Length: 222
Image 1 (tube, rainbow, N blue to C red):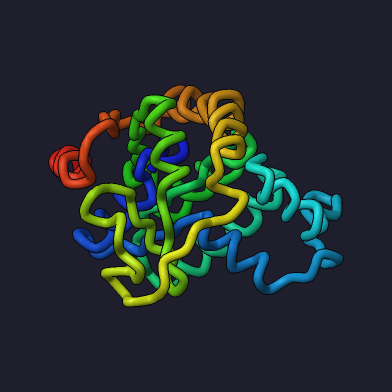
Image 2: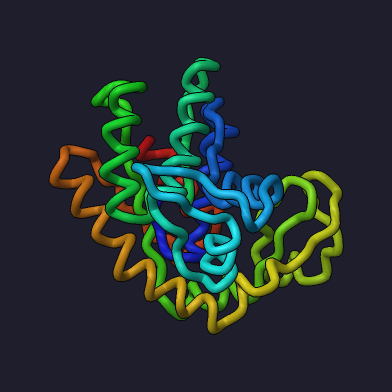
């Protein structure tokens, strides 16, 4: 699932996973889990270079994309683990950079087959992206994203797992979101051109609608 911040790619990936029996591999959750389990002085080595967790954390919290080799490394490990467990997957949040695409797209095709890797691109207006992100909350336990609307504005706990709803402080304020949108335009959009040129089908979906309407389109296409 591709799309700008707030397009609902995580929500739609979760719905498609529930509907189709896939495992939802959300890069944001994978990276958050990584940060919880490392200290700032810890590092990973990719292609002979050390990447320190503390430096990556600063990028993450500032709305700037993390070093692509780190993200690709973490995602590869997760994808390999799921493939070994014979799980089909739907991803969200990655591929976010051209480097990730060049590393992970061939990797996915090698594991799952050339004809079994498809991209969904959820389009969303920039003003909607800022609004949705600056108003949304996530749950403390499973990180479910709760969109802001009349039905959810007074919720204190997640309707799915009952845990406390919270804001992602720093990540979902207006200025950080604008930075994330700039990063998306400059660093993620080229991924779509790469995928097209390498034969990956791109399914385009209008994300400026309700969750149910968007999922209906995705499910029809799927």
